[in-house]
Image (tube, rainbow, N blue to C red):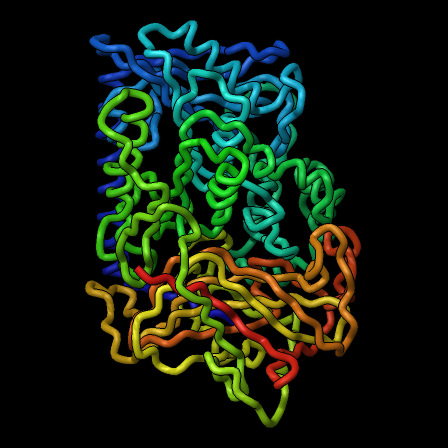
Length: 628
């Protein structure tokens, strides 16, 4: 299927891009001038317990009227610009905090950019305090800062999003006594259980490969700039590029040549073995001393599960820790800078990002690092999409009144009633790996964010996408927590992917956006709320895959990531099921085999999939219903 390029009229697009770039450039310039005028910059090579030295940039307020706490970010993405005369345009999580006055610390982690040592991918924590790990590097850095940077008040906070969020998380394990507050944002919690790497056994292809093609390049010595990545696109159309590229086994001969460290790790560990388990942060979240505020977005395409992994891990293993969770209607990292008034075509009715920075983040660090005000923030602040309002909760997931199951029925119906059915006991479709279902209508090689709420009408009419839709809702229904999927399926092969998407269908008379340069039609809009694949061979275990028996009805049970959403009165609930989601996840050849190491182009075959909805073999999705 050839996708359509969404076009914005040239004049409107030019005006929009000009205004956006001008406002952004002006903001960055203003921030840069303020930082240079109000902060002094020093650079240090800070020694660790094993003798390795880490490059660290320290921005200290010029005003010396009071001692200041530290706010520190440890990152694998570079502390550039280098040189004490060269100032970064962004030194803290927000300019509100920069203007409030902190000692800001930015550090290249071990083995990256200007720091010494060897880099280890999401390095696991060691049992011995004498051994190196990222927790030890955080401890040693804090200890050095407290003793060597003048005019500090002896308190440290840490922050960072995505991979830096991982360093915040591991840094609060066995923490230095001076570490009082930690804010992991969209942290990488477990790469094989829903974050960047793998979702229910399915490989998140373009995101991973774009990432590791440059990130995994070997570094012979400290450097200020890494060489360009090994993957080169010869077209802006990522769908066509990956279709022409072929299976994952082509990456080394075509691009990587065995030189990309992290790709070699995937090849050596194609299942959830001890290598990946040791990099799961959750079981290590014991005896956490600093106050923690985990932050994430409902529409984060990269690390949507990380905040829940960290929050729940602390709740389970460190129940006495001050432990908070903030989840807004954001894409990956947008809470740091964006207004947060919308996600693509879906407005939220307020500037949620600005509210977070001024009312939540600012208060959290101000209380724990400066002793200012009261810590009256709830345990959980979650934005209810659909209702478009913040809700204070005492835990996540919240208590619910009941569980509402929707059964997949004949003739494309989605019903809360488990009624007797006649006729064909299943829906059937052919999945063709030569014509996979696209995950977005955008022509792109990047793994963006807008697809997380994209109108699914662009695939709903395909014969390899099965659609089930409810009647019009007669009252609002608010759902919270994970969505449970219980399918009975079969395939003509020995393996298959099943992608389940839960969709909020707008009324036919829904109003279009205003302004509306893209000419979006909201009447009947099929807003993707949640979607996730499962690779059938991993249906019972991520460690020990099992083949499907061709043609045999088989139960597949899994969960879609948490939501907090109100399906409004007059809307409908839709479920779409398909077996490809390309190129977001790699293609399944329909055969039980190692897709990282063994698959070849000739292995890919059409397969016939069935979704059962008979009186004996049922399929359903279940929501936890929340009442205020």
